[in-house]
Length: 332
Image (cartoon, rainbow, N blue to C red):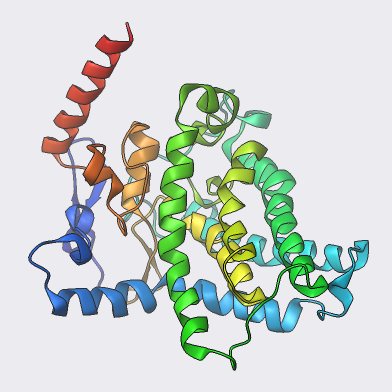
C-alpha cells in the first residue's frame, strides 16, 4: 500500500508537503559529490520525464511529420497535419492526467498539494469556470503558437534557409544537443518568467496564467498569447546553433507537454496499491500559491541564488513574508 506519510506530510491546513521539497541539485553543492551527481544525472535527468518527452518527439517526427521535400514550401496541407498532430498528442497527454485525477477523482486528495478542488464557478475565469478557461487559452492560442514555431523551424530546415546535422555525421554532438535541451529550457524559462513578473508584463499577459491558484493539468498552457510567444521562443536557439529537426521538435514538446509537471497539483498518480507515477513539480506549485517565489525550477538554482526560493518550510515562508514586506514598504 502506497501511503502519503511515507512521502511527506500535511500541514495544519491540510496541504501536502513532499519530503524532497527542500532537496537541492547535487551539481551545485560543495564539495562536489560525484556519486550523487552521477545518480542525479542518470535517474533524475536522463531516465526521467525528459526521456519520455524525447520518445514522444521521436514518434512525432519520424512517424507523423511530412517529408522534408513537402515542407520546402509553406502550404496549408502539411501545416494542418502538424497542427492536428500537436492537438491530438497534447489533448491525449493532458486528458490522461486530468480525467483520472480531476474528473473521476480515483485517488481523492491523496498526494494532492491543495486539499481543496477547483471551485465549479469562478467569475475570475473565462466562461466562469477554470477548466473552460484553461481549455480556451491552451487550445485556441497555446497549441497554434507552439505549432507556428515548429512549422517555421521545419520550413527553415527543409528549404535550406538553415542547415542541419545528421546523427551519422556526429553522433556525440547530436546526443550532446539532446542532453542540453532540458538545461537550456530551465534557464530560458527562468529568464522569461522573471520578465513576465515585471508589473507591466504581469498586467497585460501573465495575470491570465496566475488565475490558476489551485492549478490542474490543463492550467499548464493556459496563458495569454504574448506569454505563449515568449514561452515557446526558446526553440529559436536551434535556428542559430547547428541542430537537427528532431532537436527542435523535442525542444517544443519538452515545453508543451513538460509544462504539465508544475501544474498537475498532485505529487503522484496512483496506478494501484503498489505502483504510482511521480508527477509534479512542487516547486512550481508553490509559485502559483504565493506568486513571488520559485520563478525557476531546481535544475539551475536561480531562486536560491537571488533569494526568491521557497520549499514549503516555515523558515523560508517567514523569509518570503519579510522580503515582501520590505518590497511593499519600498514601493509605497
